[in-house]
Length: 145
Picture 1: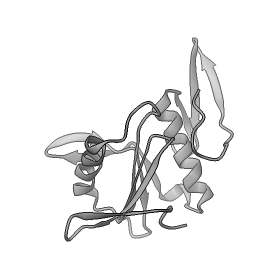
Picture 2: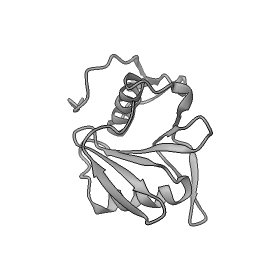
Picture 3: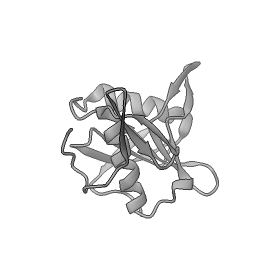
């Protein structure tokens, strides 16, 4: 497996029929452990470490984009149900390029998140969205805790 740019977290891992599975504490079930899922689970632990309640985290839920069903990786909800943070996770071998930013911004058209995070587990980008001007400003650190 990859050494990611996150603290070391402990995960429940099990093997079934020569496949490895990782337990997701938000969705409360095991998922096939592929590189993107490993990044997603690290982000979940990172969010919890930042003080975000697992009750405010949504993982791989449907969003409609241009009349097509898509799935976002992770969102953090405000108490009023609006989206505070949209996270796009990629496998460590995936380069974060303009296409990844564009994909995340397209998802955000439906979600209207205040902040976004894009990560491949090695590199993390954080930015604040101005939904009126449709511009984003990069920020150095995780935007809230």
